[in-house]
Length: 344
Image (cartoon, rainbow, N blue to C red; front, top):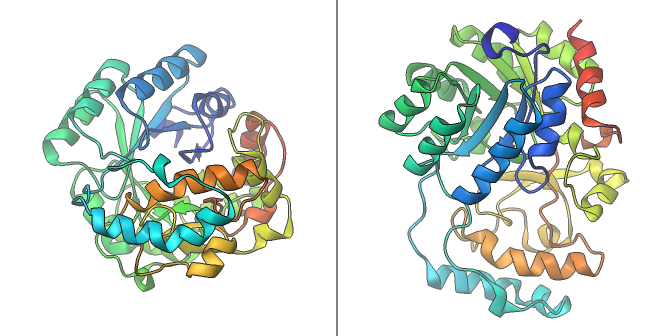
């Protein structure tokens, strides 16, 4: 890890859009880990602000993460059916349907993003849902950045190794947030971290980073024993003061609700793991009526805001991995050093 990314500790803070900004990344970097900034929901101005703050806050290596999905075709009829499906909840929480935005809320990596990287030159650039097209990837590599991407199957790991990744993140099914699959939508092909990890290590010669369900030093130790070159941890940081995790999310993480997570398409249109809530219970975790990623999130936004204003997490994407019950309240630097104790 340190030879590849220049960090003191073999630990990456997972990029987590919606619950963090540059502050969490900087704290992890200063503690010796690789802090990450999620860029999938940022416009050019927002991304530049985050990178400028992070560069000013630390001289240590850091990571910027982007999505590589294909934007969906406009689907006004499908989005309207989705709004109608959510209507009972809109009425219950007095949410305003006129506040629903249109168009995709998440943009894939593009030339503008590449230009930003050429300006700020991060040590590491990571991707979710594969890799960008060859010309864009070449621009990233020309900055000197090391390139990571997530694999949820052995086949995806081999594809990434053959298409320019410098290291592969083995994302187990336990991981919180969005699944990184890109070769197949069949979730039955995906495995738990400690089954997937050694198989990917055997299949490729690149460094492999274990992710999913790792929230304690013991998990870090297990990942190393199974061949990981480093670990990536997300959920464990959600209770850190540097995270922007909302109060309702923090409350649920510290309750018995943290023990029950599930994959759902409700909040964005792609499978992502979060704590079970009433919206998921009522509609099912993957209803057929859900619009394509990321269009499903448009109608969720005003509903979520209205419910949270009333102290309810019933309509919120409360992302968390399967070991969310291990979350602790502690500063991010302390968390990073504590986790790294498992590396030995």
